[in-house]
Amino acid sequence: MSEIDPYKAVLIAEIEAARAKVAVTGAALQAAGEGMRKSFDIPARARASFEKHRPTWLGGAALVGLLLSKIPARKKTVFVEAASGVVMGNAGKIGKVVGLLKFAGTMARPFLGDLAAKWVASRVAKPEAGAPDDPAADI
Image 1: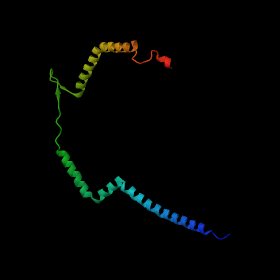
Image 2: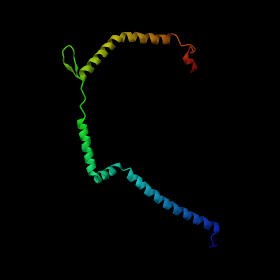
Image 3: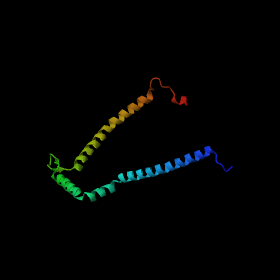
Image 4: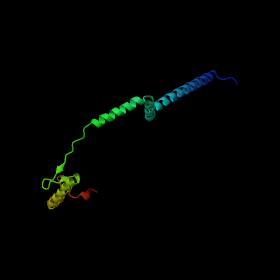
């Protein structure tokens, strides 16, 4: 009984070879993963690049600062009230618009109320074509 079946011996050898192959592949995958992790570490890469190419980075920053300082400022539009000649800020313009909208809403409220009442009355008075007479009867 101490003899091992030849088929079992072959299977055991294949299993050991597969385990060794998985161990080697696992180590290679782990090394590749570590390399990817290092390549995606942007802050560390930027820090290393700055340390390696410090004059280039500082010169580039100075050039960008110079270019930004040469961009002309935007032209600002100033609104002046026609009657008094007083400069209006955004709050003054927005306040006038809100006041006009409030006034228009107050004036339109009776008209909109009548319109809504007529619409509701028309829906309640005559049901639409093809609709059952009593909706509660279907329940």
